[in-house]
Each structure stands twice: as structure tokens, then as C-alpha cells.
Length: 354
View 1 (cartoon, rainbow, N blue to C red):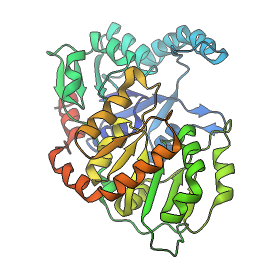
View 2: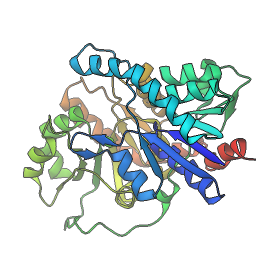
View 3: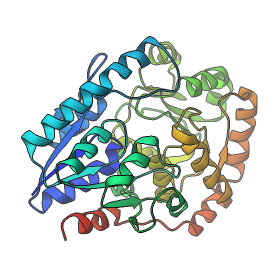
View 4: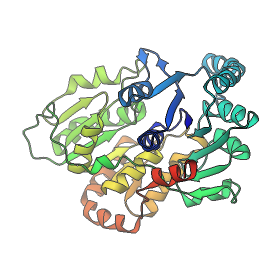
């Protein structure tokens, strides 16, 4: 059976796709293949996993009016035309959406052309695309029970979110991590592309932080900001700068860090729950519907994290780092009250191809 998966939240999508492929199904992705500088990170991950990928030209609505937003607006009708031809030429039995603007036209035409359409909502507050897709799909798979209020309860199945369980696998220390000190590791991650605002906070605090911690900083490499090039000049035995971290490297530092500073995407917060790593979460303010803030507040209520606004003073972040470090063992104990679903991909696949 052929299953078409539009790009969206790529980590859970890949987890489900791997299970489907292992059971003999033909899985084809549709997503962003090219971005400034070459292949997109999504395309690289799919290429490494050896999944066939069709490039998408879908446009999206944005909250600000810029030349880029006008360009994306013009791409919306082209994206719907392309989606129609993809559905006709590929003739999938099922379309499995993981949200996002690329999924919407494919799910729409899938419904019109009589295909089975399913969608998975990863975040606590669903984005606009998934709210629309939910009107004409067969089932809506949810990560958080709190999200049920946004959908038709008759369609909802609480599956949880597929998580990279290999993060629990022991990995050797990365070759580039040649530190010789015994200071506690402070991990800073801003998502696949990095987070410029987080990078600026760390830059201001760097002399002090590098005195008390061994800082591992994943900056991303957005050309417009030049964060990686600028911050890498400060590299030392107590400050290690990387554009990106591999899954093996993330696993190592999740298991060896005292705490992490990060955005509050759904994947991130659930993976931190999996490895029981205390955190300071800095939500992306423009995330759809305030989903990251909702997830960061949930983690704070559970007692395993502190929430920091990227607009606050860097010295307030410095004080929060000391607080989380001081109470990190108590915070680790609170993870016992969070119950993760570790077979989410199996639950989703069971609904698609029983």
C-alpha cells in the first residue's frame, strides 16, 4: 500500500514511516527539499533514511506583511495545483499529515479524490493547517489530551507522539568534545536552525557561564545572523560551538548534561521528559497559536522546567540557570509524574494499516 506523508513535523513522521516501511508499505514524502544554501535539513534527513521525496512549492499565510510573505501568498494556488497532480500521479491509498502548510493542499485533494486522510497533531495548541485538515480527515491523532477541545471528539485518538527512543542508547563522547575540565555541562540548543535570540543571551553571559560550566552551544547557521561564525571565535575548553548536533551527539549530551536551555517545541519537551533532563525553556513567540508557551508552561507546572521569555534581561536568565542547577535533582524526581506513550508510532500504524 502506498502512503503519502506531507512534510510537517519530520521527527514523528520519520518514526511512523520507518514502521510502515518495515511492514512492506511504500512510503513517499512531500516536503521542502531546497532552501537557501542547498538541501533543506528535512531533505537531508529523508535522504539519509532513504525515503523518496517529492519537492513542494506550497505557499503559506504569515502573520507579517513582507516581500517573503507576498511571495508565499502567490505560491498558494500553485501549491494546490501541484498537490492535485501529485495525488493523481502517485495515487496513494492514504495521506498521513503531520501538520503544516505543505500538508493542507494534499489533504484537501486527497479528500476530494476519495483517498483516506489522517492527521497527527504534535503540539498542545494545533496550528491552522491541522484545524482545517481535521474537518475532512478520517482520524486525528493527538499527542496531548489537552488538545482534544480543538477537534471533533468522534475523530480523536490519543496516541502520544513518536519519540526518538534511541536517545536512551549510550553513545561515546564526540571526537570534537575534547574538554579537559570537570565542570558541569550546560547544553544550549535552539532547534534545527538555531535560535538567534537565545544565541544573543548566551553571548552576553558567555564569560561568566564558561567560568562555571562547560557550555555546549548548538547555534544553527542562519546566514543573515552569522551567529555560528561570530560565536565560534570564542571557542575554548569550556565553550564548544556547533552548527548542528547529530542524534548520537544529542543523545550523549542529553545523558551527560546538568541542564539544558532550549526552545519549547513538542518534540523537545517530550524528549526531555524521556531522558529526565531539567531545563530552561524559551518559547518561540511566533509559534502557531502560542503552542510553545503552552508547552513550556506545562513543563513548569510539572516541576521539571523553568520558563524564560526571550525578551527578558540576560541577567535574569543567568540567575535562573543557577536556580535550576541548584534544584536539578529535585526536578529530576518530578519526572516520575509524567507518563509518556512510548509506542505512539505503533498506535498510529495500527489505525492506518491494521
